[in-house]
Image (cartoon, rainbow, N blue to C red; front, side):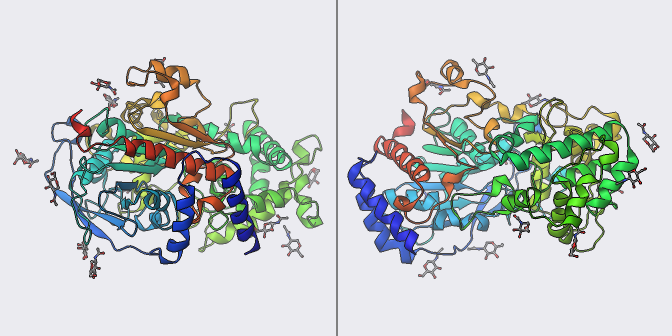
Length: 564
Ligand SMILES: *[C@@H]1O[C@H](CO)[C@@H](O)[C@H](O)[C@H]1NC(C)=O
Ligand SMILES: *[C@@H]1O[C@H](CO)[C@@H](O)[C@H](O)[C@H]1NC(C)=O
Ligand SMILES: *[C@@H]1O[C@H](CO)[C@@H](O)[C@H](O)[C@H]1NC(C)=O
Ligand SMILES: *[C@@H]1O[C@H](CO)[C@@H](O)[C@H](O)[C@H]1NC(C)=O
Ligand SMILES: *[C@@H]1O[C@H](CO)[C@@H](O)[C@H](O)[C@H]1NC(C)=O
Ligand SMILES: *[C@@H]1O[C@H](CO)[C@@H](O)[C@H](O)[C@H]1NC(C)=O
Ligand SMILES: *[C@@H]1O[C@H](CO)[C@@H](O)[C@H](O)[C@H]1NC(C)=O
Ligand SMILES: *[C@@H]1O[C@H](CO)[C@@H](O)[C@H](O)[C@H]1NC(C)=O
Ligand SMILES: *[C@@H]1O[C@H](CO)[C@@H](O)[C@H](O)[C@H]1NC(C)=O
Ligand SMILES: *[C@@H]1O[C@H](CO)[C@@H](O)[C@H](O)[C@H]1NC(C)=O
Ligand SMILES: *[C@@H]1O[C@H](CO)[C@@H](O)[C@H](O)[C@H]1NC(C)=O
Ligand SMILES: *[C@@H]1O[C@H](CO)[C@@H](O)[C@H](O)[C@H]1NC(C)=O
């Protein structure tokens, strides 16, 4: 309580001392006081009749269908006043319900309150309960593509109804402003490029947060912020352990590898690749991991998962008991007598925290929570699920497979893990029921990281890292593991490119609405605490900037904007 009072007071002082970018703060504080206790905490599902196939002319979707499916949406009209905008939260790769916090306390709440808007979450096709078919064979998944998903957004905005809200709030007569984070951020950006002011003029504007707009096969850069910004004693120890493991792999020292597996309690894992992948779980990787990593840290303590710090705390624990540190010498026979500080603690931590997640105790299996991957019938199970849908998109359009660093660069993941590891165990079975020319043949005999598997063009055609659009703002975090596939990527100096980009009408870099939150993680601006002024300064400033940008857009809105 004390700290809340203190930051509130500090924020009020700041208001007086420094003029805020927009003159909205006083009124916001007042409305906070009125509204705080009356926020909804749950939203009923509404049904929208959506087209399964928006592209009857495209050969990509043959055989075509005129079928429809029920797509769910959830809305909050508590701040809405006649003539207000609609803020569309893009659902992305999860259920609508798991996005509620964005209406309750997050960025949509902030924008709704500021602009008397209505907030709505549209559940992504093939997630939550918005599946077009009962099962998800690859033939049925064929309509799960980025272009179909963004077409849903435009089609919905033109036809949405909001029970109990008077008036017609459809686009383009009402300004619809999209917001999405991560994959949904990219979908926001692509929606605005395609259906915004410089496209079909349906969707008025959008904020793309940590939008992963760059599709790529291998994404070793996922580890770069952790490597650079994590505690270096912990990071250095893991780097040394990875180097030693990779040397054993290089030397085909199966006996030593087996000993190492035993130290982690993973002697059941027959595949060395599964072992390398599994011991990296506490650090994470783009595919999946069961507990919090660097990516799950957050400025907002109520949603932050501190597991990463526990992991590093264990690996660098000066008080680790002797029976734990004994593991540090396990590989001494193969490393000229050198010990590997932290190895014993790493393994003990893994045994304590990760092994119990595999309830069956069959660690090498694909049972829930277990660590095996080599089981085709698991991956080709067509029961609808988030992981099935996301995996399909990864294999066909997104890529970004985890991979160790090149030789000579410190790595947090064994270099034995390459893109083809993921593509073999995930993509091969996912495709294997697709008749005809996509039949992949034996995994070992095909060159997997080619466009036949993950056609990056479907995704990168909207501008890739050069992406721009009318009333399309980008906000990223400098310590986000996904930074290098986002607008502020360090992979390329794009500010010059954007101006020259033939897809852009921006004439100067100064017209590009973009913000990099210093020290920010993955779409950290999407979180809120019902009090912008009480937020940490770097988040508060990001939110004030977003409010300013949206205000500029809304001030310029005219009801016939789409005719211009
Ligand atoms: C939406 O559709 C589901 C499934 O058909 C149904 O159970 C539910 O009652 C519908 N909801 C509304 C608000 O119509
Ligand atoms: C969809 O409907 C249109 C118009 O009625 C028709 O021309 C077309 O053949 C139908 N497509 C399919 C796949 O049934
Ligand atoms: C609309 O209002 C009625 C009566 O107050 C209520 O029962 C119903 O749940 C409301 N519907 C929605 C979608 O909010
Ligand atoms: C809302 O307005 C649009 C455009 O004028 C119109 O096409 C649509 O039918 C209206 N929707 C409703 C539910 O009245
Ligand atoms: C650029 O502006 C022109 C003229 O307003 C318009 O026709 C064109 O579609 C715009 N292109 C893009 C990519 O924004
Ligand atoms: C690695 O060692 C195992 C067991 O000693 C042996 O069966 C296998 O052929 C070796 N592989 C290579 C690539 O040398
Ligand atoms: C070690 O990990 C456990 C389990 O997560 C955690 O409770 C403990 O605080 C960690 N120890 C240190 C020194 O960080
Ligand atoms: C170390 O010894 C303690 C106490 O006997 C025991 O609980 C723990 O499981 C042991 N840890 C390892 C890694 O052997
Ligand atoms: C290291 O080698 C020695 C001598 O061969 C052996 O006694 C010892 O058990 C080995 N240690 C480990 C951890 O393998
Ligand atoms: C799934 O994989 C198993 C094991 O390889 C295979 O027997 C089965 O035919 C596959 N099912 C489908 C639908 O591809
Ligand atoms: C990849 O997708 C693009 C555009 O979506 C298409 O033009 C191209 O033919 C595809 N490439 C392959 C190898 O299928
Ligand atoms: C971005 O634009 C520049 C300049 O037109 C071009 O050279 C570059 O290839 C583009 N990059 C991407 C990723 O499209």
